[in-house]
Image 1 (cartoon, rainbow, N blue to C red):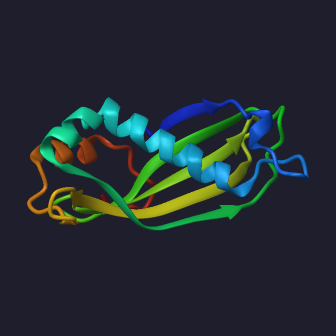
Image 2: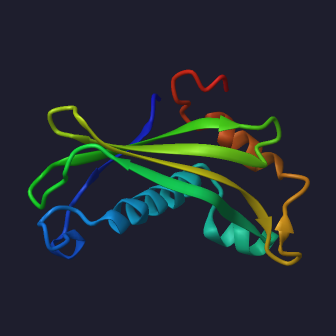
Length: 144
């Protein structure tokens, strides 16, 4: 698998007064896709709640390249750009691509895992998280 991909349905509520997708929607689509991905890799919301851990973001940035409008067909592709050896810190990229294969935006975020009881970075990382990140499609040049 080269990436996790999902076709997006742009809603009227996703538009700004200029009739293109408003900036915060890119972040919402990325967050939803990440949760769907980690769920598909076995890291479910229930599991995280039972084992008292969850993802935390340090930085999230979107570079906008081409407008997305209501009737556009957009696919979002997610890849792991980098991670450290124990998968405790990672960078994920979400690329928004039009039906004519043009990049519309690149959402990049840096994250880690939080112990939800201690409110500190999780250590050690459960093996299932490491295994899930091993299965995550890698961005070109990621070195993972």
